[in-house]
Amino acid sequence: MGLALDLAVENVGAGGGPFGAVVLRDGEILGQSGNRVTESHDPTAHAEIMAIRAACRTIGDFRLDGALLVSSCEPCPMCLTAVLWARVERVVFAADRHDAADAGFDDLEFYQLLERPRSTWSVPVTRLPHRRASRPFETWTSYADRIDY
Ligand SMILES: [Zn+2]
Image (spheres, rainbow, N blue to C red):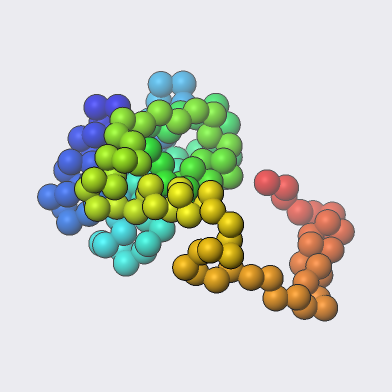
């Protein structure tokens, strides 16, 4: 956790957000990163996402079974979902969504948004029916050489 917090603090001086994350497995660091949103002009470049990407590159796989994600702050909903997609085994964090809100970040607001009916969201998210909507999944499920994930 000390490393994740150091990454978060150092990242501020480097022009990034105050977040750091480390992915480990069996005591070995597979990936680590600070937040890179402003530097890379990428709103998804949160520390946890970047650390997951680095860890996956390190092991040459898209699954992080048995891995531990250590984050300086509670993962936002996007990062938490990335953790689930990556099959990370466990997550620990220091500061929480309320601490992030106190510093001006939207983590708490987004968690609250997801708990409300979608019809109340500020961003309309609606289904647009299409006659070929199922075609990608039909193609996927019938593709013998697919790599399931
Ligand atoms: Zn995040």
